[in-house]
Length: 150
Image (cartoon, rainbow, N blue to C red):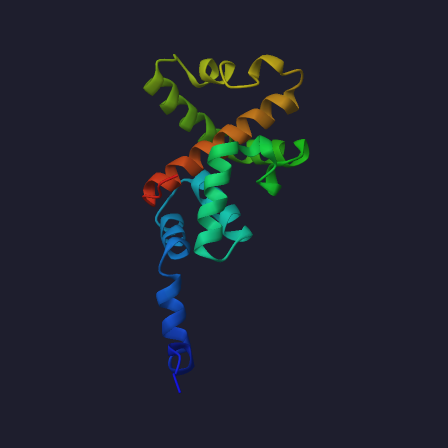
């Protein structure tokens, strides 16, 4: 008869199993003062518990974007505008950093060149685009911090 490790020390094994993407995400969150990063990590952790699901979710978001509906917290304008208003400062800081890195003068200049920016017809649509940008780009940073190949 084979005895499973989880029958002997279930808590220790559970901690060993979790010491992967999930634990690393929590450590990133705990060690960050950036509220946007904390929120992005919280949303990802709220969807899945298994490492392969978390990694697949991150890959899907980074490959297809929030526009695909794969971030259920950021589908409707009511959700995205609240998210944008809550993290506007962090999103602009992120956009300013990226703008400088790729040769734009400011975050506003960068936002004008985002995919879909030329089709904006309302403040809600503009905030929606900026919320998606903030979420996706912060998730890209989180994936880099985790050394995930996505």
